[in-house]
Image (cartoon, rainbow, N blue to C red; front, top):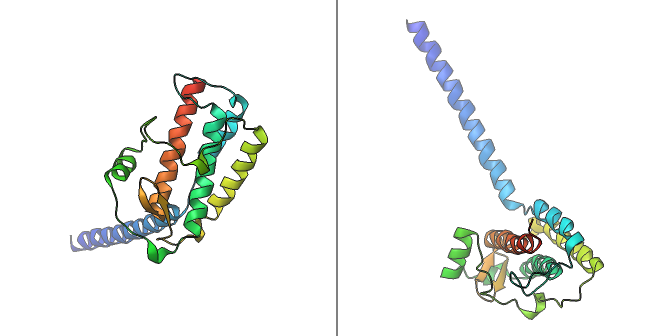
Length: 187
């Protein structure tokens, strides 16, 4: 009886050690994943939509597919470039309701926000421009790990977005435009 009790105790102790080690491993791996910016699926979708880049559906969007593709790529590049050149000491963590809504629900209301001119491309866009923008955006994403926690992007509506918030914003923004493209092309 005592031997069974000791054996059970040892088994439980080993299980706990195993579970603690596994938990620590998962925590550390999720931390390193959190530090990465992964838009691979989105880049594949963008590349696939190049074949229908001329398509337009005025009831869904005033802009054609190619505009949405180039715009979202310009935003990825511009936001990461901006954050890389920011001074983390100047980061202001103040947030607003628009950010909280966008972050929580993962959505940007359609037709409610206008893009700044710097990421508002003309409609005469070539395939070469989009492919070049894809490579530029991929390069910026590959440099994501170099950003410090409080490097930030100063969004005209969402205010200061630090590295964690930028990651969320770029996912939400990219998916927002890809949903519009999906609706235009009726995928």
